[in-house]
Structure formats: structure tokens, C-alpha cells
Amino acid sequence: MVRKTDLAVLDAEWTSARPGVALDVIDTHTAGNPTRIVVGGLEIPAAVREVPDARAWLRDSADWVRRRLVHEPRGGGLTCAVVPLPSTDPDHDLGAVILEPGSYPPMCGHCMIGLAMVVDEFGLAPGTISADGRRDVTIRTPAGLVRASIRRHEGSAGTVELTNVPSWFVDSWTQRLGGKQVRVDLSWGGDYYAAVDAAALGLSLRRESASEIVSLARELATVLAGSPPRDPLTGDSLDVYQVLLYERLDDGDTPSCRVVVVAPPGEIDRSPCGTGSSALLALRLAHGEIAAGDEMTTRSIIDSRFSVKAAHVDDTGQRLTVTPVLTGSAHVTGFSRVVADPFDTLADGFAPI
Image (cartoon, rainbow, N blue to C red):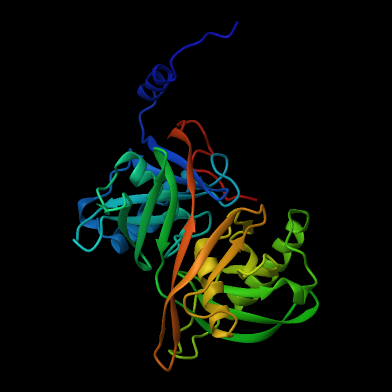
């Protein structure tokens, strides 16, 4: 018979015999895509507590944190992580550095929905309680401030409304992809996305097509890496490393699209992707398919859903920007201590294959 014992006892015995850093995390998923929220074990130098500085420090001096948290063998797929930071400014309740398998992105919608739920559920930051019982939390991300409004249902976290950073359409061009000439639309939704209508590729965005989806996305990503697009308004060279494929769906009166985002090194987002949905909203607004105040439903490759609303539109004459409000849900999946055996040659992980 297997001996039963307290997991906390085993943890204490194992870690005390193997000195090193152990990272405490709360594991969540938002619409199917995992996020690990770091809640203990990581000491960030006092001099780098601001979001841009902490992001640079993690990237340049402590990248093992990202690799241990989101790379295999502990992570897999598009596992992401968030390092929350205490607020240093009255304009936000906490800061957040986002860690993905291939990068430190400026913003991640599903991560912020997961973080907001954890903040509310476990009191990681105070926020503000509104008259109708919602908790409002402002988070500073590398892309700017985002605001989460958490509505609780029957004692547990329910839905999160996330007001994202302003988003906009950038440019379009024709590109040969998968042996076909297709239009590529570039837009910003907290990160840059090169978007292609799957119908132009003769592609159905289903799980059965995952290999073909990844192959096409890698083909386009290779082109973008070799010849980075420029913003026609500013002339800036843009770092575009994520590809978004979408297909229009007939869901009744509400505009609806299936959205599949492929991030480096070729991982499919299981959620409808918050920043990708925001970028698609900006794209459809620019093309006259959606108007100010309209809502759109986005569905993922596993059929999980977000709604995204064009809450505010601003036309400067040079650029049409939209403030998207995303609605989604996140759930706790576990409480973990991420450790590293000193004899493990793969302790710091390896990139997903």
C-alpha cells in the first residue's frame, strides 16, 4: 500500500534538503488557456519595482523565472505567467509583467482576466468596491493601464470586464501564403497581430486543422521576421510576431468570429485571445464592419468565448482608435510550488516543441 502523507510535509522535507528558489504560484485558466500567477518565492530588487524596469530585469537577468514557469516540462502549449508588482503610483492598484513561452509581451488579455480573478478571490490588492458589489482593479501593464471589473456570483468569482488599452488598425498588404494571394491586416490590440481571413485560405478553424494552422502561421511569421512591417503613420519598424486567423460565424444578431492566434514558437492560444480579439475589433471597425458601441463575440479553437465591445471610438483624422471592453471568466486550477532539483539538467525548462 502506498504511504499516505501530508503534501506540505513532503514539500518542506524536499525543499529543505535542496536549497534554491521555490516559486509559489496560483494556477488558473481563462477560457481554456492557462496562466500561472506568482504569489511567493521571487525577490525582485527594490530598484526595479516599476513595470518597465522589472520587465527588463526579468528578461535580462532572471529569464530562468519565465523558462521554469511556462516552458516544458512544467508548462506546455501557450502556458503564460504573470509576476504581480506592488503599486508605486496612485493611478493603479498593482503592476504586472507577463511571461510567455517566446517573449515578454506588452499585454495579454486572458492573463489579466486571470490575474483580476485571483486578486479578487484572494485579496492580492485592494481595488475599489462599487455600489453594486463589483471590485474594480486597475493594473499597469507594459502596454499601459487596463481596468478590470469583477462581478461575483454566489460567492465565487464570476465574470471579469476588462477595459483594454486603446487599439487601432495599422495597415494592409497582399501576401502569398499557403500558395494563395491573401490580404494581411495589421492591427494593435495591446500587441501587434498580422490577421488573415481563413476563408481566403480555404481553411476551417477547427482542432482537426491545428497542424495546418500552425504551418501557415509560421510561414507568415517568417516573412514578418525577415521584413518587419512599418507603421505608415510614424515610420517605425514594428515587432510583429503573432499571427491571427479568423473566420466569420453566423451567431444571429451579434457579430461573431472564430479567432485562432498562433504565438512563438508555434503555439495555439486555447482562448479567443484578449489582445487578439481587441486587434480584430479595431480591424473590423476600420473596415466599416463594426460601429462604436457594437459588441462582437469571439470563439476559440475549443469554442470558449469572449465578448468584446467597442466602448469608445476616437477619430483623430490620422488614426481611428477604439477602447475595447472584454468580458470573460477565469477559474483556479491549482496551487503549486515550482522547484528545481539541482541535479536536473532541464531544471530551467525547454521551449515547447
